[in-house]
Image 1: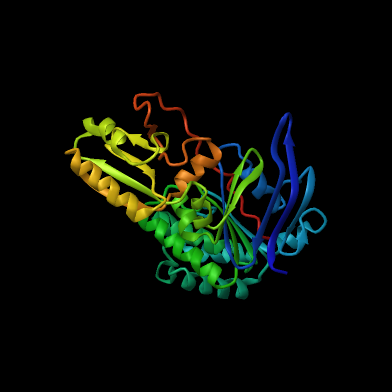
Image 2: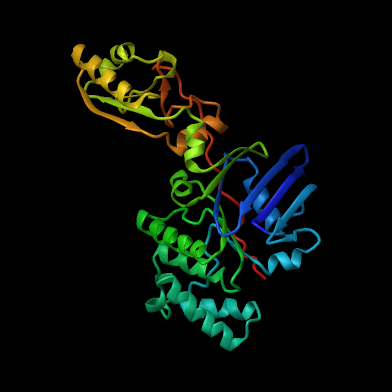
Length: 345
């Protein structure tokens, strides 16, 4: 089998609301698959179903080759689940926490002790194994929590926004740990509110909205949906934004404007030709640019384009060029995930 997770036509309804509406998803073995979507998109419900915490109303779901309904016990033996908040005893040391989890999973005292030592080494926590968890940094806590979810060496692990609230150093530490997991053959399904996280870690990304997968693919494939490369121009004088838009050799409706940042952004299908044309036009008009750059679309732009119906090239907080003073509507963000439950046995 090449797929660790198979979801076909899954539906789940709460009262009059369809949390999942015929959702389909496949996750390859030994890969990281990110799930992105706005609040209420169905991510929480999906992960609960995959981890056997919730029954679907209709459809087929298999995890690690086993049906989540008819062989739920076999599924639980093969999965790990990491919630948003560390499921650790703050007063115990790192080693004591891991040994406790091992005993809860019926490993036996000696096996639990050996496994705890292996995981402390694997996640660069060996020197802190006796320190109380309440003295750990945020990144250390998450790495220890991740280690605890691996006590039983699961084939598949579900990570619910694993770096929420961490500083950049802590996030980098967790990213390194996740890459180590996949290097060892573990399959990871990741929900995240950080689009950069999906860009950094995921082999494939599924964008979920209104209970369905509205787009899927690699980060590059999704970015291509917004129309390819873009050119960003930051002006020294924000008062010249209107004049600069009129000069750009591009279709006006496709140019987005961020007044606060003095930024213009537009498609650049022919990268070098567009770049040269923009620079020449600004120089001839005496408009001074502080910065001009070509770039690929970001996942933020893809997310907004697919789930909010906005301008595919507009950054969060930007406005379309024809009406720079227009009111800005609300933008939905990824939801906060599900309750912190660890279910691996």
